[in-house]
Image (cartoon, rainbow, N blue to C red; front, side, top):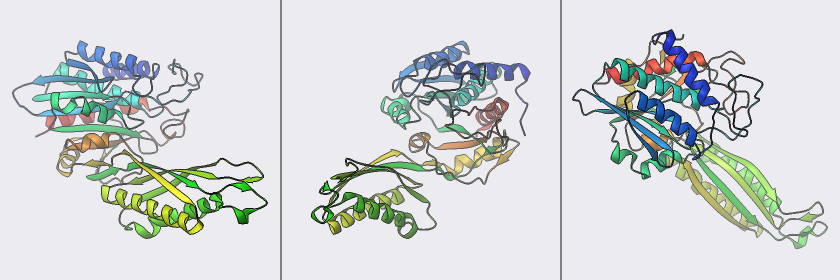
Length: 384
């Protein structure tokens, strides 16, 4: 169900903003035109605008009444390094090699739409801050803004965010307390053996055999080490050697990705990856080195704030949705401020809402923009 509470003229403005932003996609920390665009709109609406936070981040504030409460509405500035088929839509990317294939153009339009209604019609007391962050896709922008004084200079009592989800009913808001999106860690394993001619394996230490056993063993981490009530994923995503067709290589490099919903499980997974690498390499006379990097924190919704959002947020609302194993840079913000991150259905029809994120064929559904605006405005106006 699509809400129609913002009016036809407002809907057309939302679509215009979204399409104009879609045409100027910029990748992480290079979102200069995008930053200028949203800053200009917000200044015209009467917001106090600060730019250049964490690189290209923008914060805009508007205060009404005497309440000292501050609510943040967050959207992402960056696009993906993908090439869009410019024949698919008249508002296609004008920047080759960059595309809004995750819906950040729509998320920005929703926040701008909410800002416009709140500036022009009021109905709230306190301060609303729009937070447009750079570099969500690589998981760097939220941290950059925090390190650059975001929360010191622009304090928040709660922060709200939305992500569209293809395959869910268009315009329906989905909420849950606690973990909603997984944390992501990366690992790189370097196995060093002893290479040589393929005709004499008995004189060598074959790192491919070691890697094969290690990759298989890593599948037991989630199956036998992680509590079944705690979700985790361990994926080996790339395997490379320095060998030739008739030579056993001296080195194998394994790259992978893990997903967890809490720090304890993340630490357990890291420990098991390191232990298995050491043990299996030692058993074969090889050496192993693990580099383990935490990229995205889990996104965990504050239970009390989520209860308020569920009570106020939308007529068409699912307050018992399942968490997903994808990751979001919003998780860093949620570690510093009570946070509510909602999913917004993008639609279930092939070619109109159901196309997967990060696909060159993806496009956010213009029909859901109003639902996002309505959700934000309800929360800002009704927050206790």
